[in-house]
Amino acid sequence: MTKPRVSASTSTAPSEWISLKEQLIQFAAIVGIAAFVAFTGITLIEWQKRESLPFCDYYASESCIPCPENARCSGKNMECLFGFTKHGKRCLRDQKIRKAIEAIDELIIEKFCGNYSLSLCKWTGPKQLTVFEIAQFVEHSELDKVLGIDSENFKLVKEEGQDAAIKRLNTRKNSQGLLELYCPIQLVEYYKPYRCRAWEWMLSYRNILLISCPLVFLAVVILSKAYLKQKISKRAEQLYIQVCQTLEAKSQNNMTGGETWVVASHLRDHLLTLNERKNGTVWYKVEQMVRRDSRIDQYPKLVKGESKVVWEWQGIMKRLIAK
Image (cartoon, rainbow, N blue to C red; front, top):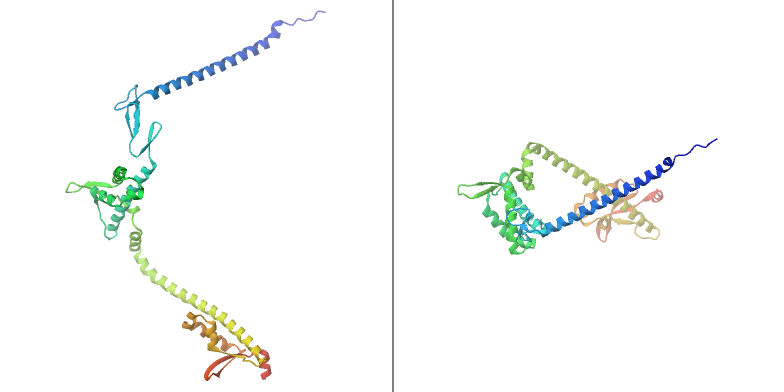
């Protein structure tokens, strides 16, 4: 019996397919690398070419680069205008100058619109200003010293700050041909002083205030008196406890033959503060508590030739002995 023959083509086909696949991958990698190198080289050449081009002074073309905004160009040289700092091929606003311009702008708006709102609240204040008056106001404000800018640069900062403020205001020419500035209503409301806001609020709710204010005042008076009464009562209770402790301790002198009583006025001056002595209300309540206490006996006594009211602690044992 003869064995079947295996074809040579069937055994070599898979290896040939793998070899072809590897060749395709290698070819694709080579093409990709070549494309990347070519793209990078072209980009660098274009960048170098563009860097070597001069700036356009007055017009733009393929042989020059347009001069950036806020810059002054001459050939390959670029100089940023005042208030701007060079960042590569751009001129960006200098932070210190920007803050100075914003400060001048805000000062003008706040001063003018704040004063204008006063006139709406029946107080004195200009309703309009001229450009000259604004310039005078900024000139006398001495902002150059506050902002730390030299006088040469402050002139340009002042002009830009004034221009920024004028753009936010309404303008019109008067009969004399001068440009007058008016504050828009939205800025008037924003910069209106608190005293003006309070005055407007009181006028709007005057009927309610006429009714509620006396009621609020009466409630405050009643609550104040109630709080004061409670405070006096609490203080009187504290003093009454101290009086009882003092008299009870004094009664221990009975065993040694010492004085067992205390002059009421002396005890008062010892326990009360200076303000409480002037008022007398607190001690009056203490005296009422002493009168209602059966453990304390009060009677007149001649002390150093003067008649004094003295208090003496009776206690339970002393009352039993007396009986």
